[in-house]
Image 1 (cartoon, rainbow, N blue to C red):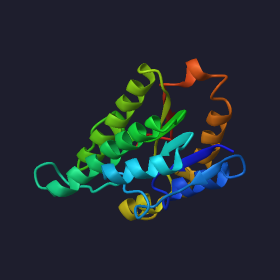
Image 2 (cartoon, rainbow, N blue to C red):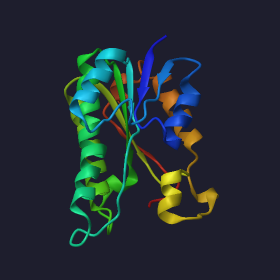
Image 3 (tube, helix red, strand yellow):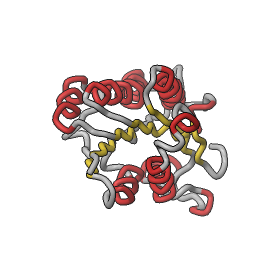
Amino acid sequence: MKTIVITGGNGDIAQAIALELKKNFKVLTPGKNALDIANKESVRMYMERHRPHVLINAAGVIFPGSIAYGDVEDWIKEINVNLIGTYLCCHYALLNGCERIINIGSSAGKYGKPEWSGYCASKAGVERLTQSLHEEGHWAVCLAIGRTKTKMRKALFGEEDPNTLLAPKFIATLILAILENATTFRVKLSGQIIPVYKEEN
């Protein structure tokens, strides 16, 4: 049974993915205490210990704030977790035999939004990182996820019509389908940025 590591393991999306995949894979969902993706040594040791066949980068943070008046440390943390953390996980997973990578991006990575500069910039970087992985010969896909029913989304926007939001289970089902067809559609699928949303943010 192949091992899958899903970063951001306590998040709603990561938990939904784990539930969908656990019948076919050995699934690990480390939280920050087990895997601090912004810390190089934490990532190196975790990937050397568990040697995942599949890496799903689902960890992410957002701290809304304007470029002029927002907190500089919050902006840096967004880049460190969302982009540099994704890079570190890819780097050390590949060094330890990882065969497939799925990066969780965002529709916010396609354009800048007011007070979301760090999040938008980091998610745009995740898309380019994914394409670079493919160009270097690795199997990698990025899901550009739109508005999803998660605790993070609720904290930012409060109550929204659930019919306009993606369910985490839908994302998990899509990932299972991608992994099941990864070999058949390797050339066609790898390197792609796959939009997953009902409507633009």
